[in-house]
Image 1 (cartoon, rainbow, N blue to C red):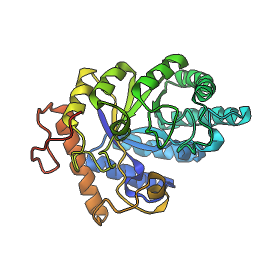
Image 2: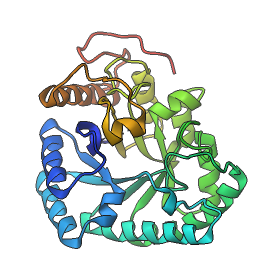
Image 3: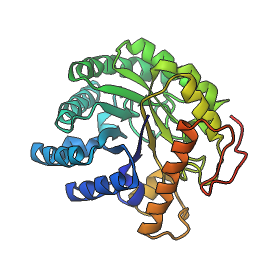
Length: 310
């Protein structure tokens, strides 16, 4: 498995320029990560020169870059407006083309619609039909580019389209492209799935990407609200060897805090050095738990903890 984190852990702003990405890449490498997940929308807007520069830095650090998309409404592949859907197809094809300059092979997110949903229209059957047709075309382009797309299964407060692993499997079966798979997220599964481990096993070889975080979006191991040993065991059961990416949100305020609904500081007033220590400890926790195959969950101090059974 490759372990990574979303770039926005240290940020209150979604915006991130090239210099900031380079600094974050150096930081995540120093902490011990294998991958950095960045914004697909930023990729779409970066020049070829900027992308080549970022790729040079990535290669020098030995990092993998994955692209995370939370599409805007103007790129909604489930829209009832054909012009909006065509705009979305063009947008994602542009991202796929530019990802080649980063040698990035993984595009993930709620690509089937827009994020977060405003629930103004909730005709699920129609949304499936329209977005599936679009993803068949985008998926063909992804296959030509050697890129895998993983569709994120969200909770009921963020979408109505894909909220369970079983739904996502049916959806991907209808798309019928080998490049289109599933992203499961422990935060969303904690809300929607009866059993997180069983959902992972149900996904099996269709699991293309995994996001990890506690039930309140703290770092894995920070409070052991989830049974991380059971999650690790399920990953072992399906032979999962792809990316495990943290998507933590501790900081309130700013566009990030507002989008994720972080209404109080979850960092305990941490400065950047303390935030670095938090995520370093969490990475060590995940590697211990997912790779060493322990039978008892441990918190970030190494003490045994009984997490919530999954």
